[in-house]
Image 1 (cartoon, helix red, strand yellow):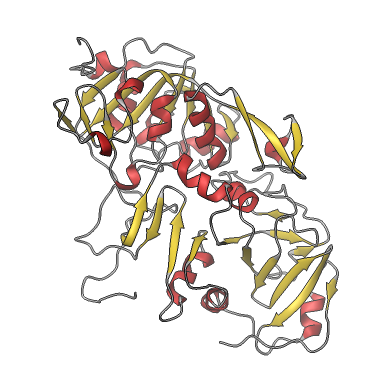
Image 2: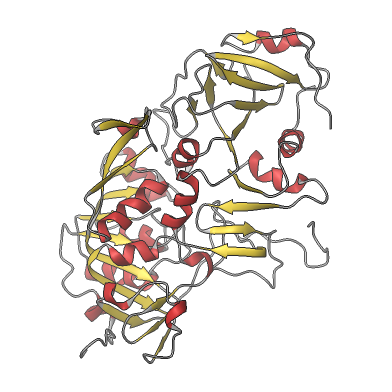
Length: 239
Length: 218
């Protein structure tokens, strides 16, 4: 690496410095747009006691779910979980600490964390278990709760394309939490399907600026589909 | 006769208006997309970052990078746009979505809704439901009126942990279309062939029945 060139050549180098008990923010929604190879590298490293911040926790043998069998995750902050058997077992046995967070609050916690905003008020969760222990305040006749932002020791992100400077372009709904995650890591590591030279991406079309990115690696992706739903190709389908 | 899942969706679809941006929850709400009236344009918002959700893809069109909030593969409608999760919830929390349709376990006379957790059972999480009920003004809850054992789900007070407080104004069950205001349920319409008495019997919270209650028309 030199100057603004963020490209690293191995996954080992990409995740160097990740140690036990750190907080890792991961992009992705379900299995869509997850940094699958960076997760696999965390499994390989065997780092333990992690606090993981992600909308979901993968499935049994893919995504963040692969960190469960060796008990690498101590706590997960997520909006929707339990799509795998081992997760359910660990959660019910009290081996895994789960902090359920509304999806929009989770996204905003990352966005605010990356933007240097320590906390924000939101109407989401007022009067629900989410509000317990949180400061409540009225603005313009409506109640809001105070939610604290999140910064990770590491953020792991999947983008579609990047230039060597770490300017990122995401593809379709694989964008999801990735842009916010990218801003909220003390060290942000991004894996992509294609790396081009600086100047090749249209600056107007860049979703995440390279300033947020510390390390960039070219990966091969399985891109597993969680719910394969189709319509027959013979019908025209409804409007 | 109690409404089928499809009929519930069909009745909700009558509440759509041309030019509406709509978020449909998982389950019955998803079926509403099949009953958009002819000649009407609505755009479906999927909270994982898609406005203008299209139909399911053909086998050839499947794209792992294009899913809906239920994690199903989808396509994009003409004029669709893609954005990140913070932006998606800015739309929802900022009150920009015209109609939200979602399911529930219970609602009560104060407009409280419980839809995400049954203590003692596996808790999967609220996903975007808490943001949706807190951010939207126009929400329709679809649910069955009572359990299989005849226990009402339209209550004086929700018994389960809440998804949102004081945010529900309209409920469409398999038996009735109900409005919630001033701490009471108000019966607007009944399912074809279902009597007012039957609805009263299966509604725990106070139900106001004013005048003749029309049957739903399909």
